[in-house]
Structures are given as structure tokens and as C-alpha cells.
Amino acid sequence: MSISSRTRWLKYGGILVFTMVASAFLAEEVFRFLGDSASMDLKGLYTAFGNRSYKLSANVDTDASWSAGHFSVHTDSLGLRCDKARLFGVKPGDSVDVVFMGDSQGFGNGVNFEETIAGRVAVEATGAGRRVANCAVGGHTLRNQEELLGWLQERSNVKTTAAYVVLLTPSLSLHSANYTHAEVGADGRLYGKSFNALGRLVVWFKTHAVSYARMRDALHNSGLIPAAENTPQVLQLYRSDVGPEQARQSLLSVLKELQERARAQGASLFLAYVPLALEADFSSLTKVAEQKGMALNRDRPLNVCVSVAKELGVPLWNLRPVLEELRAKGHPLSLKGDPHYAPGTSAACGNELWSELELFLDKPHNDRR
Amino acid sequence: MVNLLNRLGIRLDPGCWVFFKWSVMAAAIFWALVYAESRESENLPNFVYVNF
Image (tube, rainbow over all chains, first blue to last red; front, side, top):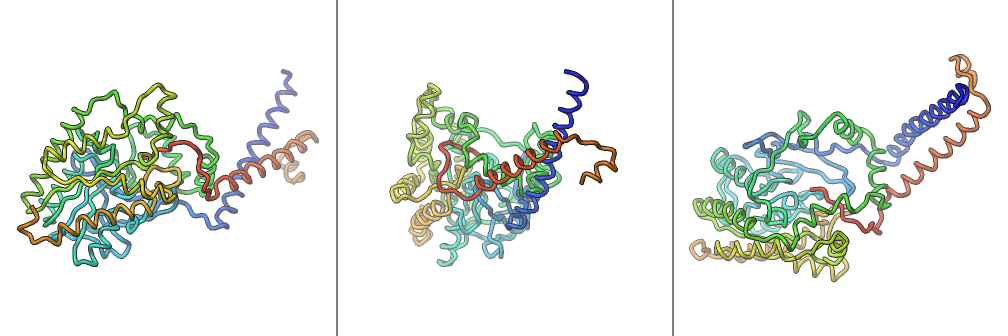
């Protein structure tokens, strides 16, 4: 290639880069004019806690705009998720009737407090003169949750008088042996170990440029993100060739500790199986697994929960029929491009749990065991 | 624009101007596609997206 030819192509490259950068600034202004706003991406939500773990920070008001949509998160003075007005907040020294534990589904990823399972129960319970707290934190295992509950009881003197409800997702059912560790950045967000300068740049764009969310949603909606990159974690949960014993023992061990903790406060332990929305229509996942030469068992996580509940002698409420009923009616079960429950699914599950809890709470204290 | 570039000492031949016009059109089409695809859609792609 001659020097003049190379110079010409360099000029063309420069023109293309200049045009795209200039158009990005213009597109940014147009999207903002259309009403888009940059996501806080849950800024300030997390604080370091316990065994290289994390919890929600106290008195936080933040939000996020994910591909699933926009939602806000508010926490009380103890760092438990509550409503914006903090009517459902808990203070040190308070007594609550019911405490919920769980992971991201219990926390309510992608939806507002009133649209979460625990939030729905809290709203219904308040009408009946009961108080509900939600300890669930996204990414927590039951080990993390047990640690957080201990802190609430022993350091913040929060007493739970009636029921501990563990919202067992497939992930939580099968991965309870260890703690989840994560770095909490100075900005109060969670970062994995491999977080580097590029990752920080992505977060900066995510929280400052509205065109980032537009491009992400366009990629998701057009299906340009290949399935193979996103499904392995889900497939692992249902592998039929992995025995249940190890997961069963781990779950049993941590739930025994929670049961002891509940008994010490005069409360009872309840388990609720909270399936992935996919379980209501498992055929799509089975097809993906077949392409990879894997065999799946839809009931693997549920069977572990059933077995553990039987051994502990505690009730297990299976929420899968609720999802199947919603699916039969044609309701969307999960959020757009996200496995977490849609508001309608959470509300239906919350109503189902409240109907069970209400029966229990209405019993005289001595008849509850 | 041309005067400004000349003052800055940047000389663009006619071929570059044609390429610039094509680039502007390509950028406009790109952002129009981003806008169209990013709007709320009931038709979800057939893939599983996990955001644990």
C-alpha cells in the first residue's frame, strides 16, 4: 500500500470515528429529550459486612434501570428493604411477627418494594396488625443470611415473635454450603474479584450515559446476545446426573441453625420453594440442554427442599402451582430479559404465602407449634 | 465547516466529503435502529438471560 493510499484510508477511518462519536453525543441529547435518565445502578446500596460479605446500607434511596425496567430501592435504619415512606421499616429494638430470608428473588430484583413477595405480605400483614421484615439480599446464600439475622438479633435487638420464612430458590436450595464473598466499592456497589479498569469504565457509562441502556436493550430485544453465554448457570441447577446428597446436607445444616435461632425466640421456621419462572414451562430449557447433551430434572431443587423440610419437621410451601396457574392464564411470569419475577407473579406468590401465614398467626400462641 | 477545517490546516479532498456524508447516514441509521429495537416489546427473544 502506497503512502498516499494509507493516508487516505487513515483519513476515512478518522472521519468514521469522528462521525460516530459526534452522533453518540447527539443521540444522548435526543434520548434525554425523550425522557430517558441515567441509572443510579443501585449506587450506595451495599456496605461491607461480616465474613467478607455485604449487606444493604442503612437509609438508602437509590434506583436502577435494567433491561427489565426501572425500579427503586429504599432501606430502613437497619439496612432492610422497605417502602419509600419507610412505613414498613424496622428500627433497633423492634419486634416483628415474621421475618423473610432469601436471595435476589426474596429481595425483589427488578421490582419496587410493594411488588416483591415479602413486600406484598408486609402490605397484607399490616392490615391485620402484623409486622413483617425482609432480610433477603441479592446474591446471599443462607450462610450469609444466617450471619445477617444473627447481627439483627444480637446487635440490633430485633425480635421475631412468630415465623421465620425462608424463600428457597433453586440456587439457594443447592448452594448453601458457603458464604458469598464480594467487594463493596467506594460507591456502595458490588464488584467481583475480576473488576478492572474496563469494568469501571462500563459502570461509568452505565450511570452517566442514557444511550448505554438504549444500546443494551436493543441488543437484548433483537436477540443478538447468544443463548449459550447465559444459560449454563441455570442448566447446572437442574442437572439430573448430580446427586442431591451434598446439597441436602448443606441445606439441612444451615436450616437446623436457623430453626434453633427461631426456637430461641419462640418462633417457628417455614420454608417456601420459590421456583424459577422457567419451571412453569420447562420445555424450552430442556431443548437447550439436549443441544448440549445434558439431561435435566425439573424437580431436583424441589426434591432437596422436600427432603430437608421432612427431616426438620417444618412446613414447605411450594409456589410452583401459583406460577403454573398464572402461565395457564397467559400472564408473563418473569421480567423482560431477566429471570426474576414480574410484579404480578410476586404479588400472587405473596398472596399465597400470606394466606398460609395468616392461618398460622391467627392461632393462639400455644397452639402454633 | 470547510473554512474551519482549512484554518486548522486540515485539507479534505472531495472523496473524503463523500465518505463523510455516507458516515453521517450510517450513524443516523445505526441510532434509528437502536431506538427502534430498544423500545418496550412484548415479543421476547428466545433466550435465557441470567442476572443473578
